[in-house]
Length: 203
Image 1 (tube, helix red, strand yellow):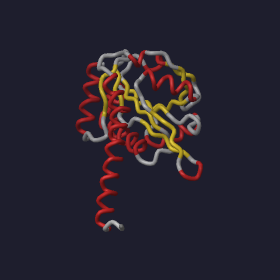
Image 2 (image 1 turned 135 degrees about the horizontal axis):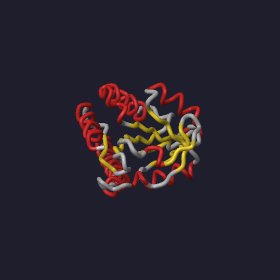
Image 3 (image 1 turned 60 degrees about the vertical axis):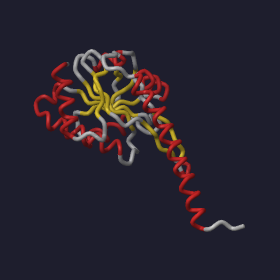
Image 4 (image 1 turned 120 degrees about the horizontal axis):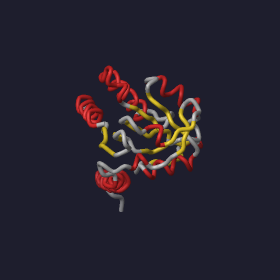
């Protein structure tokens, strides 16, 4: 017996709701667990890593200790989240005025397959030459991300291409490598700027 069209629509709506709930649960387990593991005051940014910057120079954790920093993890082919985050960090650097010299802003590629140092240089320079871009091989980036509770994953798309799912928040770090907090995309610019100023004041 053929079901009424309205019944099919209802069934379809219920199924999509279940899919959305399942997806939300997955995101919570993936991102929420990472956030719970990151405790303010923990010095996980002092753990060793080895990458290269946008000029091809080798860098390690020691290269970024001694000054507070803001870290974002993404990829240059990102259509919206990454360019938005970097543009907003450029705006925060402008708003800080001379105090911008007291903060390091670092963009780490989670797509080292495509993001060579040359690609990273063009990308970060487009937003703000004061932003440092880091890349490396996949093993190096994966080890670093794991130590810093950063999630990322390569996801195939139609046509044989791929995109990268990744954590979207910016992590704030004290001068001695301790986790200070995050800047979230849903926060207003005034809230984020106040957090950055507190980070700079506390070192």
